[in-house]
Amino acid sequence: MKPIWIVDDDESIRWVLEKALARENLATKSFANARDAIAALEFETPQVLVSDIRMPGDSGLDLLQLVKSRFPGLPVIIITAFSDLDSAVAAFQGGAFEYLAKPFDIDKAVELIRRALDESLRETSVESGPSETPEILGQAPAMQEVFRAIGRLSQSNVTVLITGESGTGKELVARALHKHSPRAAQPFIALNTAAIPKDLLESELFGHERGAFTGAQTTRRGRFEQAENGTLFLDEIGDMPFDLQTRLLRVLSDGHFYRVGGHQPLKANVRVITATHQNLEQRVRDGLFREDLYHRLNVIRLRLPSLRERREDIPILVRHFLVQSAKQLGVEAKRMSDSTLQFLSGLDLPGNVRQLENLCNWITVMAPGQTVEVKDLPLELTQGQGLDQPGHAPPPDSGAGAHHGTVSLTAAPEAAAASPDGWLALLELQAASMLSSGQQEVMGVLGRQFESALIRTALKHTHGRKNDAAVRLGIGRNTITRKIAELGIDGAKDD
Image (tube, rainbow, N blue to C red):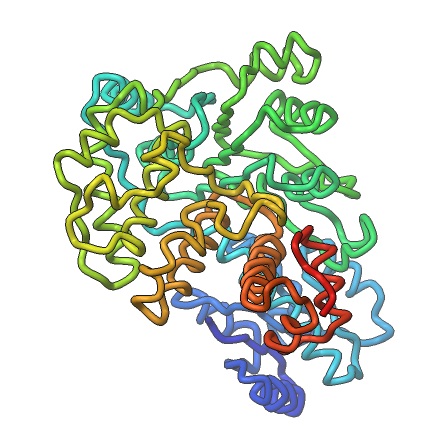
């Protein structure tokens, strides 16, 4: 994390803030005037900038204007005299994150800087994204058509609609379109519209002004602003609420939008790429999707083939995912026998490439030997039932051994027992799969599964006696009774 810059001609204020932030283990760098800070910006940037508004030479507002023109996502806190209302108004108009009125309480100042720091780190994580575009693999004719289309669109800024089943790699193609476009040096911002609650999606897309709604303590840039001059990828566009479709259409039509609670129009220079697994034409006919927006988005359509249409790519993908999974866990990569590859190539794999990647993660952790045979695959596959999709949790009463996402935390217990940390590796893969698929409330979902597995196992050991199970688990009788009811666990009885 980069340091917090303090710009103030008053040495005592610089000293107080330096000491207070040092107690919070936050690095600082101080400047006695705006001129020196401006010169330093040529070579480095802070995580947060705190500046006095009135200083000899360039003022804090001059510094604010320069920072916002070059680094719009950098939070700037302006220090101003308590009675100087005009300065505070000017600071907000210039895009300041917040202002501190002198004399200020040091604890409140640190709290404010902490909030600005959280916002800065959020912006950094959103805008940086993956350092490299993940590789798109495929030799099948259907994939070669996709590659050719990406090449033909390489010098274009045209709007693209990517269609295909879930798990076919729509975001990878969107990233490739960005990487090979004139906007490649600018941000690529991705948003899964189905993963954001309806009442938050508008703010997530367009940002909000301070005080626009309860909890809006600061002005926040939306994804359109974050993607300025770059590419905005809107996944699962078919799930966008109807009223927001109208706002999106307006941006695509005239290139302007308003933050939530804002009155100043903002111009958007953004290439929009969208994706969906749904039949948008049918949703238009059903009155669930605006026909005019559909035509705006459907300028160029790229359809991604399912894995069933490119079975010859399965061996290539399997080898790639096994190596990738082994690197993540720091183990030797496993290999599949020819018969196992042939077996997999004959499966439907409704989850497509994502399901295949999840399977390779499972194999890396759970398969007993270095060479994977058909008998080493999950029972769900060998019995022809298919692997569950990531991001769709089984209900609490579906059994502790049900698959969820990449792996089942209770599948093949003898394999997990062979390594004391095996279940932790499974948990990490599980969480990674759910997070990458955009699922919300991951902690709650996994927490319920974890509690359910523990309680079910304890009840088996105590032959259903819940009070005895509570003692063995180290929890209270009331707690286990409440958990059994919440999680829908059957077979418990009073001692």
